[in-house]
Length: 271
Ligand SMILES: NC(=O)c1ccc[n+]([C@@H]2O[C@H](COP(=O)([O-])OP(=O)(O)OC[C@H]3O[C@@H](n4cnc5c(N)ncnc54)[C@H](OP(=O)(O)O)[C@@H]3O)[C@@H](O)[C@H]2O)c1
Image (cartoon, rainbow, N blue to C red):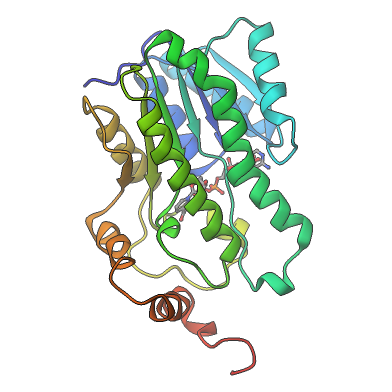
């Protein structure tokens, strides 16, 4: 085990549910103290209590809406005031929106870009210098297998995750030799609250992963001396991701549209 966060502090965004909740448990189990970030304060408080009882974790709960432009600055200021320095940052908070962009709620789509993209950049910029100065820890940006191809009816979501994937691979290079491990975690469809939030009435296609499996894949990567920048959580997902390079664009987009939602496979106007 080469990723040892014992005695250091990790920030987990989106800790109130799904992968973030699981990251919090596994980091606490390895002896990290935690900063728990999400909007639902009641859930974060309950988690903090549980982790403190179970592992003796010191938790700092910071209820925050990451769609607000100065959220990262405000979090950094709060932690500086409390003299908490961050060794590990799990940029996990995010959500998707199902449906045609032209029918979508404009404010919700803006918030999706703000949380999935802008907040990740701002939080990284806020905490990475300290992490590099301390020469340890890890940066995990949660992307998705959605990052590897355009997703009709989840166009904004796919594009935000493509950003996260590209951004994180570049950061992986920039952090080389600093002692900070950087990975883009790319899970496939997983059983969390994600689909309820995305308001996707259709069943997920393919095998659905558990949060435990996804987070275990991240820790396996971090436990390597030199993790590769992109961590795809299952072999079948990795194969799908490779497909992007071989299939003509038109075919790829049509295929993803059909696979993603069998009930709504036809483009607008052709049903
Ligand atoms: N589940 C999947 O199929 C899947 C697959 C690939 C990638 N992912 C990615 O994995 C990450 C975690 O998602 P999940 O599957 O664990 O879904 P989830 O159970 O819905 O959890 C999402 C988390 O993000 C937080 N969040 C959402 N909007 C926020 C905001 N404005 N400010 C602060 N926190 C916010 C939520 O907390 P509050 O609501 O309390 O604020 C929640 O803790 C996301 O980035 C998602 O895109 C998910």
